[in-house]
Length: 220
Ligand code: CA
Image (tube, rainbow, N blue to C red; front, side, top):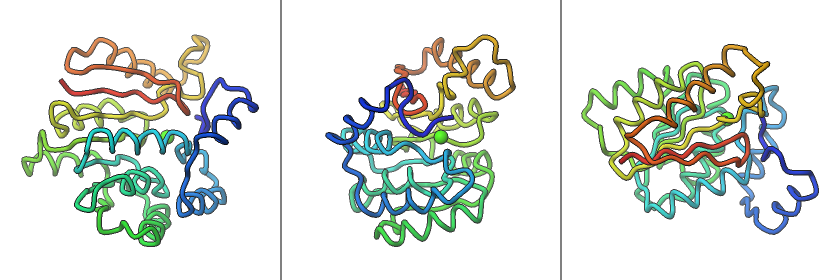
C-alpha cells in the first residue's frame, strides 16, 4: 500500500505537488490528524483526492458512494466538490476512525451532505439495492477491505447508473501485483480483480498509476 504516487522520484513528486496540489486547510488538518493514527497509510494521497474531486465536478455528480471511510478524507474531498444538494453515502464499520471523520465533516461544513452507514459495507449496499436505488448513483469509490473488492464492485455496478463511474483504490498494491514472487492472499485477490475488470464488457476501463493505482470503471 502507498499513499503517495508510486514510481515517481521524490524530486518530481514534490514538483508536481508544488505546482498543482490545492489541498484546502480542512483537508490538510485532517491529514495531519490522521498521521497520528497507526494505519495512517490507509489515507488516500492528496493528489488522488484532488483528481477524484475533479472527476465528480466533471461528471456533475450528485449522488455518490464512499465504500471504506477510515478517517473520512475521501468522503470529505468528494463532499466539498459536490453541489449543495449532493450526497455521499459513506460505509464503514469502525466507530473510532469514523468519529474523526465526522468531526472533520462537521468542521468543513459538509456533514449534511454525508450519510454515514456504520455497518458492514456489503449489508449497507444490499440495503440500498433492496430499496430500489439501482441505477441512481453517479459515482462510487471503493477503498475498503481488499478481500471483498469483487463483491463491492458487483454491488456498486448495480447501484451506479449507466454512465456512472466506479473508482477503485490500491489496485497496484504497493507494486506487489506486478511481482510474480508475491503470492499472499490480498495481492492475489487484487491481481484477480484487475484481471476480471480487464475482461469485463459491462464497463469502459482505465487503470491510472496515480497514488497506489486507481482503476476507473465507467458503467456502460
Ligand atoms: Ca486506499
